[in-house]
Length: 286
Figure 1 (tube, helix red, strand yellow):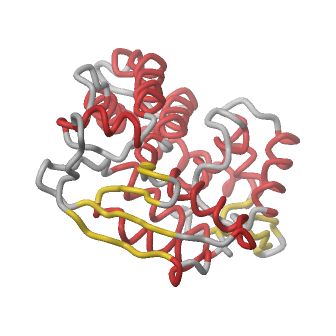
Figure 2 (spheres, one colour):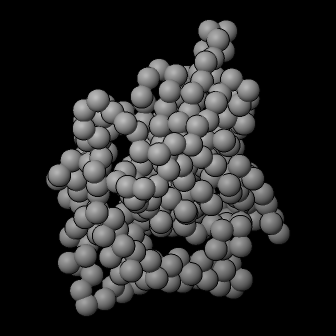
Figure 3 (cartoon, rainbow, N blue to C red):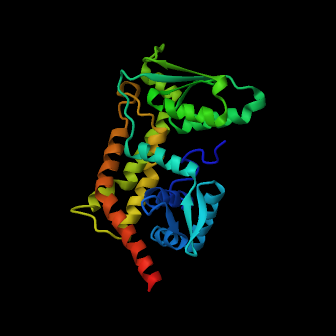
């Protein structure tokens, strides 16, 4: 079983979560390796001390997210293969939130796992939940068919493909309304609250961005915290058709706000990172 299960195992805003976000945003662009000193420097702009950051780096090593690697005698870190796959999947989710049309197909996942493998059953349910699947019954889950590849990856990783049957289906035929059914299969109120929290916490950033954002620590911190808060939402929000959602669903507002913050802050934040890393190289060389 992969040690890197998903991108969900740290609380947004925590040092470990912020560190994962910084790594996801900038370590690959830095050539796949970053010195410990540079990581500590970037995290300092977010608040955590060097000691706290080094502790978080140790946690990510234990989770097989990072591998320590020295280059020219300088200690640093690279990504594991599993973490690189996780981050690539995260990129697709974060920057391209799903929206399902009423005619798109559905994926149904039916499984029967013996009690002797109850830990695998627990892991399967946990991981299906974290990619946005809903629970129709204990052994029957549902998601947009666009998620079928990820479902197959999870089943293969857990060694449960032989006890699982996948169906591709049209719109479910339910006894009541589709909205009522969806509210039972997914915890839509919890997902809606994630959107509302994101809107409340980051709406001011768009106002502050006028007319443009200058590269600096404040732009970097605002952007990283935005990504850190947003990144779990596209996993848990299955992007259901409007006919499945409450009338006051805040998903479109949250997604639009994220796009505006991305447009305003992504490049100034990247420029701050480039300058910071270049300054470190210059100081080291001198």
